[in-house]
Image (cartoon, rainbow, N blue to C red; front, side):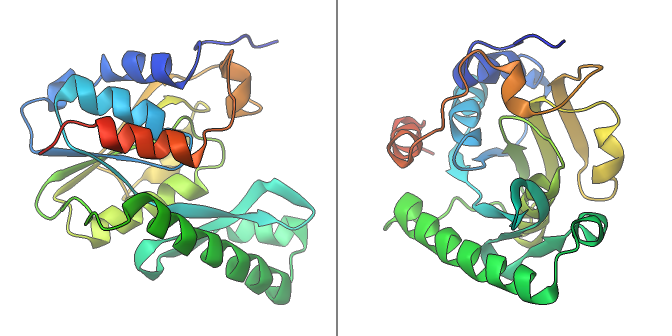
Length: 215
């Protein structure tokens, strides 16, 4: 039986930031994955005195089991599929296309909602620090890392409060560094490691971005 490790996402962000002090002297942009990764990323950005932005991706959930990711899509047309999950779930090309259409619509809505008139923080030639509230299958985080690499980041660092042991192999060749605050022996879902894992709202995401240190 696993017990909660973090009080909430903000406390998780502060504890994660303590493992990222070596990045303080680098030209870092902190990129949170909406929605849940943004409160975590906000604490990291504040500690590192770095700019905060979002990297918008959407998980492609199996139709009958939406929490199980068969892939993810992101800004710039990035698309990552998990062939093994698709095969095991028996998802047809038609079902995959339908889920992708729905998630693309939501992705575009979120980009408009979170960015508004504010241009994205440039990552070209910089260290892109991608932050989420945890990793389960890793499909969403992989999509995010591909996005920032395609945008010209010199280095890609992925940092999360919690992830399964052995997850590093899923990011070989995608990231230059992976930082995980806690890797429990038994892992079922990210939420089990938080006392408060309430869904993050759009309003909270916008508040985090508005409070961020201007750069």
